[in-house]
Image 1 (tube, rainbow, N blue to C red):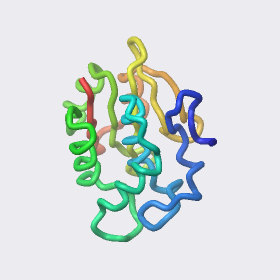
Image 2: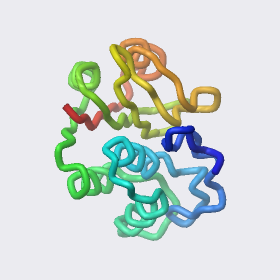
Image 3: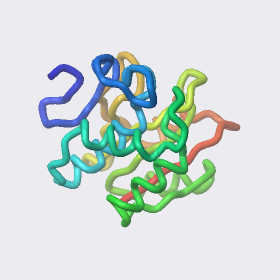
Amino acid sequence: MDGFSDDGYIIDQDYFDEYEYRTIPASDNGCGWIAAYNILHYLGSGVRFDAVMHEMDRMHSLRIPGPTTMPVMRAYLKKHVPAMQEHEGIEKALPAAQTCRAGILRYTEAGVPHFISFIRVGEAFRFFNVNDGLEDFVSSMDMFFTTHVKPPQYVSVFTLA
């Protein structure tokens, strides 16, 4: 299926318009469940992407269009990846992200709240589903924060040590 990397990560939510998440096409708001799926894939869980999407969809108490909320992301990760720790604010998020092996970053991309996942590759990180043209790329965490996470926006990162 398009939208996946050769090694099984979801790299482009634009290919998920046939799936519904929070009452609208997942291509419009699927970044949260995609980031969670990618972390589970990284951990070798074998979970299907649609199972992650449906479970996270059902966790929202209101059946209205919208993105994945932080309370739902926190609850999902607590249940399925309890080793993940959250670090809020740029002063805590950047150092935690620089030293982890994988994580999920919540920030604003092009003015829109966005979740992405990333995994360590050597001294750098591989980022997934950032935006068009940056679906799957490698960068230092410092460079990613410099080019994408601009203060004073809200930022939070969930990390695996």
